[in-house]
Amino acid sequence: MRILGVDPGYAIVGFGVVDYAGANFAPIEYGAITTMAHEPFDKRLCCIDTDIREVLRRYEPDCMAIERLYFTTNQKTAIDVAQARGVLVLAAAQKGLPVYEYTPLQVKQAVVGYGKAEKRQVMEMTQRILRLEQIPKPDDAADALAIAICHGHSCRGRR
Image (cartoon, rainbow, N blue to C red; front, side):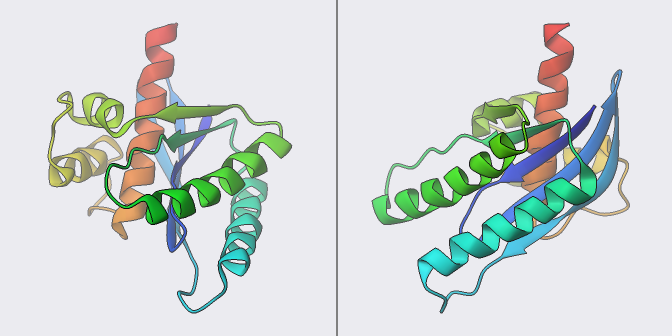
C-alpha cells in the first residue's frame, strides 16, 4: 500500500510518501509545498492545490493520511490552516482516494509508543522506522512521514 502522509498548513504543507507492506515501511519521497507570505491567501490556496495534485499524480498513493487539526489559541491561524486542509482533502477526494485523519496524540502513540512524546522523539523514531540516514527536513516533512507511519500501523491493527 502506498500512503501519502500530509501535515497541513498554508505557509508550509509537509508531505511524505511511503510504501507499507506487512510491518515494513519504505520511504519513496518527502518534502514540502511552500507558499509565499506576501501572496494573497487565495493564490496561496491555488498553489497548494496545484502542488498537491502534482504529488498525487507523480506518486499515485492508495490513500491519504492527514493530521486532524487541534487549535486552542490563535483562531485566525486555525481558520486559515483549516481552509488549506480543505484544499488538500478535496484534491484527494477528487482523485478517489480515501482520506484518514489522525490526531497528534495518535501519531505520537503509533510512532513512539507514547502519546505525550516530545517532537524530537517522534522525528528520531520516524528516521529509524524508515531507515533514513538523517532526520527528514523540513520538520513538516518529518511530521508528514510520521502521519503516514501512523496510518500504516493503524491499518495493521484493523486486519
